[in-house]
Length: 197
Ligand SMILES: Cc1cc2nc3c(=O)[nH]c(=O)nc-3n(C[C@H](O)[C@H](O)[C@H](O)COP(=O)(O)O)c2cc1C
Image (cartoon, rainbow, N blue to C red; front, side, top):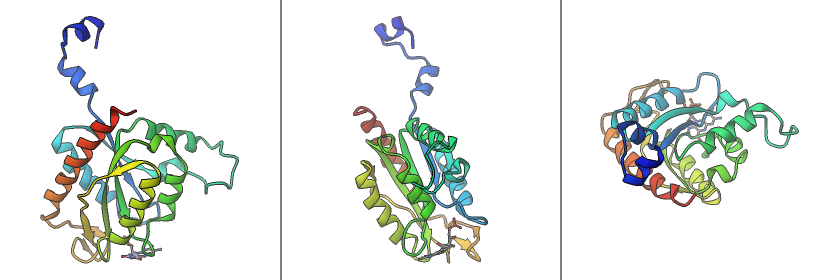
């Protein structure tokens, strides 16, 4: 926006687009054969229909993060991961349950950044035999330490009723309202918290 536009309060359509929040849909699993990309694409499809923010899939696997503390920390993926998070205003974590918690890959990725997580909002979409609820609750504890405000609405997907053979994602209709309600809260809080940063 130019100086005169600011002075007279003129906002063009282009400016409004530029001011949209950036929300990352973070895939929490990295294993070969994982189902998280299917879930992430479904969530992004719902998000894009809303058109109220810039939504993107953020795949931890793309950053090839080493295991924290095992290298000198100069791998380009570490800086790229931090840069990506710095550019985001909020997150939706796609969380899968591994041994009643989040994946090691997601914990490692969470540990690899600090300030760039702070004062942002996040929602969780989880899956597992009990909807990934136990993993999601662990993530909420971690988010407290990282100063990420986790919203209440939490869609939980069942490996038994939302997947065929536990591998082909076929979500039940009923989850759609929940995902949108979660986004309502993520967008509201992401916008509010942006004013703190
Ligand atoms: C190491 C491991 C541990 C798991 N532990 C649990 C568990 O405790 N509870 C559960 O509901 N599902 C568990 N599962 C099943 C996963 O939730 C399921 O395989 C899911 O598809 C994993 O997500 P992903 O395909 O994106 O990797 C486990 C899977 C793996 C690979």
